[in-house]
View 1 (cartoon, rainbow, N blue to C red):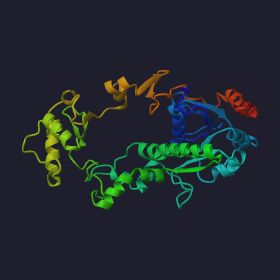
View 2: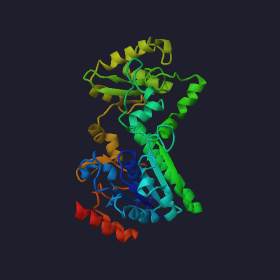
View 3: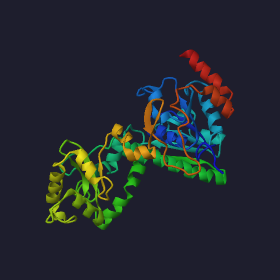
View 4: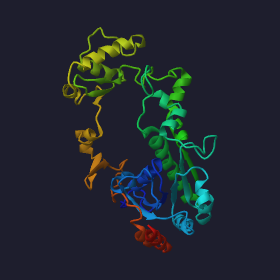
Length: 380
């Protein structure tokens, strides 16, 4: 029987407000139907913009709690006592000092899964130091894999570390631990360090390195832009195309549509890769982006235009799938992945700090929550 609200309907999540990967992880849980309550601080974040446009706070409700007030920690512990999952992204030791660390929370709720989102992890020489995505990916060797041989490492926004190596691994850990908690009644702490997750993403390449099929430098391998059949090329009007014609049958189709000459270097003759790359680049530079889009449309040549965010939202394929949705005048990615029986949905716009205190107090049965919030509002 279909359950409304997504596959995580009924799962309660407490998110201690932070920035970056923690909020995104909580958003993903909310997209999948979890009841996410974000605990915002009265002072807010120095990086905060318009709450209405903070899409990582969609599908959440917000309460405002001053953790430095005498009754602040007790309020969070009351929420934790009623939750299945908790997410915090403080530096190691901060949650403990505030009185809402794992020991305090698990004492109130032994089945709680306590998720800790950090860059360096809870232990190690760098654990207490500041950091950001670019440093985490750099130290794990992953940033050094990206970019041309004769240029600097390329920065893939903060997608690779914060969100792939951080948020997604935290969610996997939380859901795995939730399964264990429901089976045994015993919760635990999930230490999701971005350096660990990012390193784990590169597992395939460690195997290739050991086998001698991967050079420990960027721009010289099959999947890092070293191979001409897996690279980006520019059309005559400046548009870019991503070529991923790895398999021989797809490369044959690519070469045919690109009209490479019969005497072109072989696809995997690495000694002639510079020559082949120059030849492919010359062919792409002979036509506009629109012309090449028409040439490769519907083919198995594995060629795609490199789009901007706004162009992606208008792409025919992504439009047909509903990959992007518009709510409240804001275009944004739809919940993912998709479920046949319990689909996720955009149930709520981004939560405004403290706006849902009374509602959460009623639904979660925490009567003191409203009093704390009103006290904060009177002081502000």
